[in-house]
Image 1 (tube, each protein chain N blue to C red):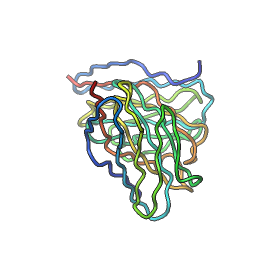
Image 2 (image 1 turned 45 degrees about the horizontal axis):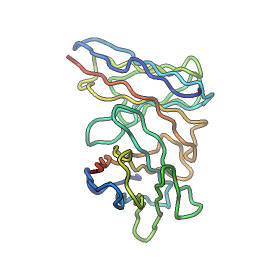
Image 3 (image 1 turned 180 degrees about the vertical axis):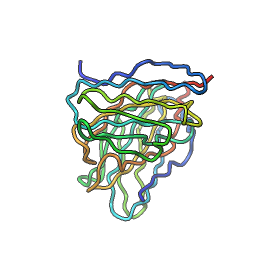
Length: 114
Length: 115
C-alpha cells in the first residue's frame, strides 16, 4: 500500500536535546511538507521541499531543520533552539507543489518536552 | 494574504441531523478551497476541494460544500450525521496560481455526534 509513514508516534524529549522525526513516503511524490499542529490553531507550515536536495522555510521555521537527500524521505530535526516544541507534527506530500495537488498526510508524531 | 475563519470551534449535532460547519475566506482573488477531516491522533484526510470548476463540490462520506463568492464562504454540509463523522474538520485556502506552501488552514471545528 502506498502512503506516508511517520515515526515515532510518540516522542519525549528533555530540554536542551535535539530530536529527529522521521517521514517516509512511497507515493513517488516530489513535494513534501512539515506542519506543526497546536490545539485551536490549525496547521502551520514549518518547512517544505518541492524537489530532492532543495527545501524552503515555511512560516515557523525557527528552531527546526530539515534535509531532503532522497525523494522518499524528509526528516525534521527539532533543535534545542525551538522554545516551545511540544506539539503534534504532521508530514505531508503531494505529486508536485502546485496548489491543485492534494496533500496526503501521515499519521503524525506527538512530541512532548519533559 | 489569504486566510480562512472557521466559525465555531465546537459543533454538536444528534445522529441523523444536518451537519453544517462554517468557513469564510479572505482572499484578494477567487481562491482554491479545501476541507480536511482529522480523526483523533491521526493525520488529515481530504474530504473535498474547490478549484474553480463547479461551485457545489461533492466529497467523500456524503459531505458537500458550496463556494459562494458573494458571501466569501465555503460551508461544509451533510444531510444526516453519523456517529463515525465525529472528528475535527479543517477548512484551508490557497491561491490558484500558487503552490501548496501557500495553503493556510483554519483553526478547526470539532464535531460531536450524539446518539
